[in-house]
Image (cartoon, rainbow, N blue to C red; front, side, top):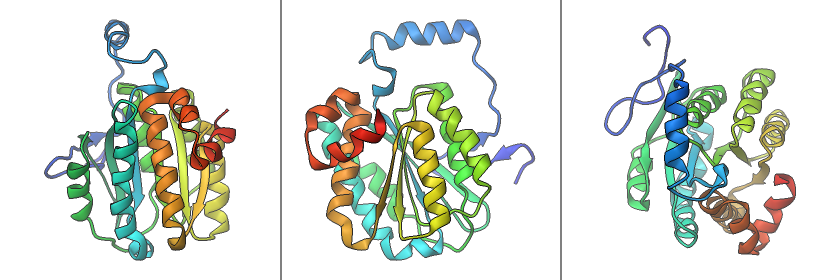
Length: 243
């Protein structure tokens, strides 16, 4: 791996991102803000960009197909409130962490996901959070959806970055598979720092997971008002922790 680089993408439809990209100038930022005002909702958290991050280590293999199928529900829900663009991020193996291009259609994301197989390795949640921070520095990101079952990193380091993305308006929705207590503590704290939500699930709760993902997509596409207007059990479950 080249020094100073964080491999969060290479190959078709992916890119290699620098660990510390150059900061935008004040003129660039002001130009972006002027343009952004003409493109959509005033609420910066409702820009319709969502990062969908997955732990693709070997322990996730039993539910990987479930994750691949449920993402379609996110697009269906978002389409009803104004659209959504999604970037897929995953990690697996020895230091492999990749990000896709941003996509706005179900088929493109599904095609990316079906090419991924699970491989043994440790968690790389810090890379996911750092990548989210970089993307949010370029352009607002409404939400980070993270699906995983373990946490094998320094929790303080994770929380420091979570606090930074929270300040940028990114809400983290931490979907926790299984019952690992260390992962639960870390995921709950990341959700709290970003005013997102901690959402435990197992393979038997596919219907509930689908509805929750749809509610998160609705928020990412249309903001808090769209989530409140949804009025579903899933949206009512999310709202209390997001205030």
